[in-house]
Amino acid sequence: MVRLMFAPPWRSHKLSVFAWHPADAAAQTPGPPASSRGARPARDATPERAAQPRQPVTLLSAGTHAVAMPQLGYGVHQIPAHRCREATLHALRTGYRAIDSTSVDDNEPAVGAALRTTDVPRNEIFLTTKVCNDRHGYDQTLAAFEASSKRLGQGAVDLLLIHGPCPQQERYVDSWRAVLRLRDEGRIRAAGVTNFGIRHLQRLIDETGEAPAVNQVELHPYLTRTQLRAFHAEHGIATQAWGPLARGGRLLRDPVVVAIAREHARTPAQVVLRWHLQHGNAAIPKSADPARATQNFAIFDFELTPDQVAALDALDRGELTGAAPATTT
Ligand SMILES: NC(=O)c1ccc[n+]([C@@H]2O[C@H](COP(=O)([O-])OP(=O)(O)OC[C@H]3O[C@@H](n4cnc5c(N)ncnc54)[C@H](OP(=O)(O)O)[C@@H]3O)[C@@H](O)[C@H]2O)c1
Image (cartoon, rainbow, N blue to C red; front, top):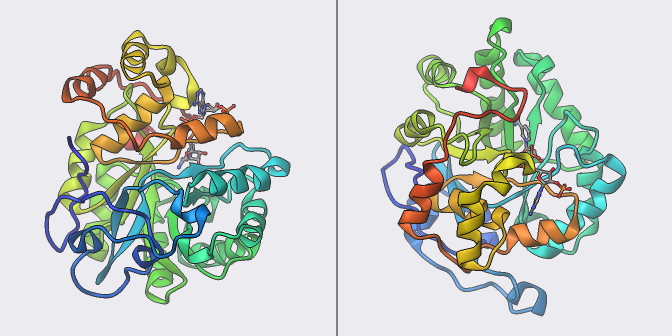
């Protein structure tokens, strides 16, 4: 079974699966990546935590150290703001420990409210937000982060992503320098991008010497992006899938997906999410429906066979479901 494929710059290694744990969240000390230290026992045995399944993590490169991010997260894009606090709380109760937020919607305040309400300690939650495309530029990016941080009501966030390269604006390298500054000042723990193509990533590397820790792109069995993922692996960039369920559309009714789901007595969505995990993709499925959000998290206790993974790989048809980005193709 392929478990990962994130090769950090300090050395190429396979990431083993171990429990998401606060100590991993704090794995910011220089030295060997957390994965090389192996599995750790749960820190405490309160019933709520003891019931948590072991969750795989993706190690992100953050300059001199590694930051652990749960491989499966919860996306809140397009959840109406008035339902977002409760949806986020439900996700946390279910066991999700990574929340993918964005300043594009108006739900950062709701995510922040959920984080202040939950009894899950903040340092056990991996919080992501993004700098919008209309905030490119060094000073604008710094200001956009301050605004997000205020809306979230959180001092620091774990991962800040630049939403897209917007090459016509010619400012994404400046934006990237600002994100790196925020990381170096400890305002964010890891720095990344979304919807960047190979040429944009290469330019960041060439001009700043630093690759993003994460590139979040639309990715699912109808859009497997083998070239981009190979580039990521080569440069220690973690691949994070947005639209991991192809937005709940035809993919979940595809006969191949449905047949594999029957073989495992699982749902098509669980099979697709399992495919992501086994490829080493981080994934952030969204569901505003509590039952589906719960179902999407229940994927740590079965495994697709190599033939099933290959059958899902073969569904690739380069199909973008989002408006985005020709830039990432
Ligand atoms: N960086 C970017 O440019 C970008 C762009 C888009 C999204 N994102 C991030 O990625 C996250 C996920 O992407 P996404 O929302 O576009 O697509 P997605 O997660 O692939 O699909 C979400 C859709 O699938 C449905 N769904 C969820 N679980 C299901 C299940 N078990 N069975 C059947 N249908 C199910 C949802 O409906 P219900 O809600 O009714 O369950 C919703 O319509 C977003 O929330 C956001 O955080 C990032």
